[in-house]
Amino acid sequence: MGLFDYKTYIIDEKLLAIQHTLMIKDEKGKELGKAVKKILSVTEEIEFTDNTGQHVGLIKRKLLAPITEYEVENQYHQRVASIEKKVLAIGDDWWVEDPQGKKVLNVDGNILKLEYSIKDMLGSKVAQVSKKFFSIRDSYGVKITNKDVDPFIILAVVAAIDMEKIKKEKGLV
Image (cartoon, rainbow, N blue to C red):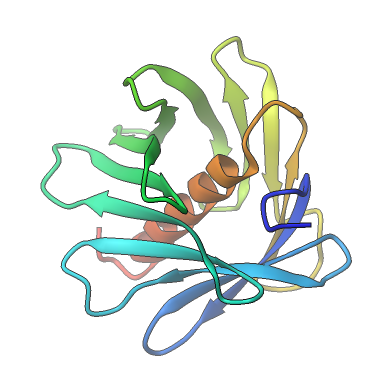
């Protein structure tokens, strides 16, 4: 099975001195792949690789956009979605748009505490992200509850939110 063939993932945060890495594992702890923030890049990029090191996807942050926006590209470098964040007075508002610019998913919950859900536009939960799934420090779970949602899009949302959360904790945003 490939990296995006699962419905439950463990995300292990590895904060290295040079780059930020999310280890992506199955629910038994077997490494499936990783999402690594590329260093020495003009734009912020997070590359997804499977457990053989093969490139399977990329998210790139648009640095000059009026809102925080990540473009999501599949392994063939085709844009499959965008992840966007609007900063509000109370918190952050995250959503996902398809390649045509139509909103398809919303993020709801406490992002900083890693307790949030991803919902479709009808309000039905398609994925849950929670630190409560696991007691291991620096690990959290992702459970995809809708069989029609692309696991890559969900993991891309998780990686983008994680990147912004790390920047917020370090006072960079």
